Length: 171
Image 1 (cartoon, one colour):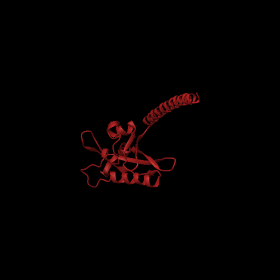
Image 2 (cartoon, helix red, strand yellow):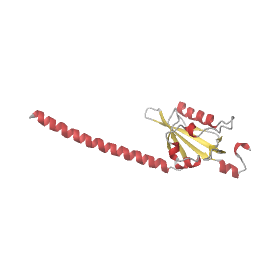
Image 3 (cartoon, helix red, strand yellow):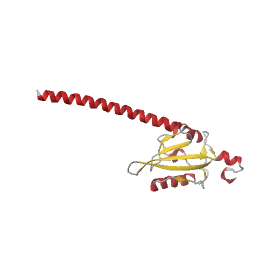
Image 4 (spheres, helix red, strand yellow):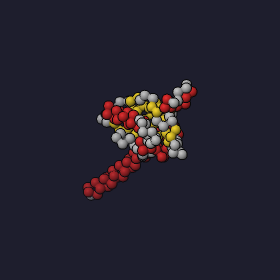
């Protein structure tokens, strides 16, 4: 009888734990959805990147629009595969400068604010359009101080500078 009682108690406890586990999974799904909606609603041009490979795990609609791509075309791709330097410009340094900034963020675990960067963006027709950006890169640290993500934020300064007589590339 004791064995049957213990079996019944164990089954009841297992069912209770299963219900608790499912409730926690549901809360995690809601939290993930809410976090995704929060990020999507943020004003500004931002990406969330993995350290090392700089793989894009999140992108705001404003960022996607600024680089003339759909958000889905950005997600789960390496940043520099999606946004390369203009291959017709051997002196282009946009990728090199941005990579150096991201590597500083990862190594030093601190925000890196870059100087004005010339970083042309590929248009849907394959041609590159001149752009001037002010990038800022910030680490997201876990509880142990390790970089788990890097937030890449940029401001497109092209229009503002053009209104003030500054042309991309100093032309």
